[in-house]
Image 1: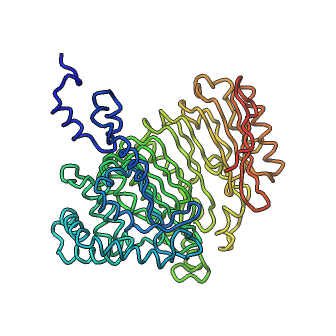
Image 2 (image 1 turned 60 degrees about the vertical axis):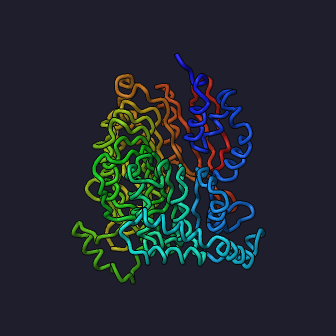
Image 3 (image 1 turned 90 degrees about the vertical axis):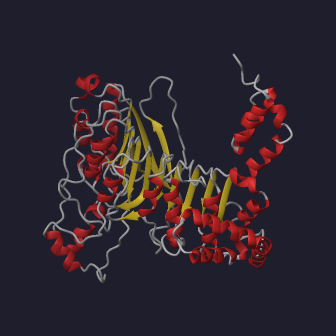
Length: 537
């Protein structure tokens, strides 16, 4: 039987030629025969990998902060074409802000403009040829005038136009991070080009440029709630549809009634993390049903719309009338955890391993209705191992400022006694659960002594049958908690000790600057477990 090393030299050279540049080092170091072929190029390969593996454009908030124009990366490709095969990570930061010289000690704004002009003067013909070829492959039916307009923008050092060209030139990207504020161009003047990138990537047979052919991790980050710049959930869908995509992360992203056009179970994504987002339930369920085998799902609700008494779109008499009729004007923020869980149970009951549903605040969102927010039960999940929930989803009691902000403005009666009794854990948690994490945050209340007693009802007698894998319960609380919450934690420690379940307590504190940190420790550790103290976040 012939072996790899016994093959003729011509086949060895053919193998090397067909191997991806980024993977050549692994091939060359696999055996002495291939090492002899590549030892002269090994150092150059390692140099390129270290230099080009991560591409950052726009603001780079390292030390010191600097603004990196994408033309610099395009110049690298024009001067060394093989360099475009090495980037694995691309971070597209904000490019819309003026570059103040006192924030960038490497080059002044004038020096950067001069450098951009120099790049264009040296390579304008090659840039034009490159743009025309890529535009023809992306949009074969578009007029040439569109391609020339794109080319002119790049020659004028327009950052967004250049970034889209770079995305088409890097065939081996695996991780893409987009910071959205200031980049409305993705859906305006360059919307057709940006859509063409993802459309081309969805069809491997026609994706001759290799665009996003290896992309598996996409992060979309919006700005703060206080800014006017919004980040839209519509950007997530096309990336979720890519064949290699596995992880979708979003921070401060909003959306209403966004459809999924590619069919149920089309997406190969396994991890969805939506933090500080305001996405309506229709959009969430549309995208949940799109995933074939979802393993991890995180959603932290953060309402985006601060309603005003003088608002033009919604006036308080209109909202009051709608509220009393059980209806709300379209577009208002709403958190519906029970509906989200129902969708997950329908489409991911046999694959979901991690679930986190929390709310940063409920202010400016409409009140719960139709028995929301109570989840009632997670028993329908068969593989769920870790669950993190806001306590409001267990028994509905919330801080007055969170639940009744809208009611107080409407002049409606407030009732602090609202809320259900905490459900027994044996009827609530799935049999596959290993860790159950409760957090109250700014919304809910930590479990009281009566809540804990209700949760542990029947657990000592039926633990082996109903929750045989439950190992740990975690509870978060604030430094200035009241007596009722403290008694609840003491009761939880006592009950867990009786049934042999570990308890982790996480205390949130604020320093003199208002920064939050957490200290966690195990109250009833298993043999060999060690305490964790002073963890800053």
